[in-house]
Length: 117
Image (cartoon, rainbow, N blue to C red; front, side, top):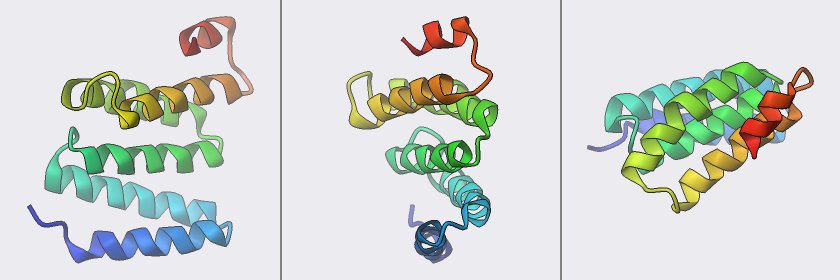
């Protein structure tokens, strides 16, 4: 399947907005980009997983800890494990981001930190 040009344009705009520090606007675009990838390729496609990680990073930059953790742990990681395997760099990146989301959360619990191990 060919990716609609709008997603390429949105990605470029999101990169520019990120460089300008306009993180709320980046989050809106990253949500659209991720939804477009899911609709085009499905959740388990390597490109979709990469865009999902970008979305999670945007959430983390805005301190949306729980939403990012849910996306990473409950949606992206299971899909990456099945489609890419445990040792793929995207799977490892998702796990790294889960640990970061758990570690950086200001209201983290001891159980959260144990989960991040």
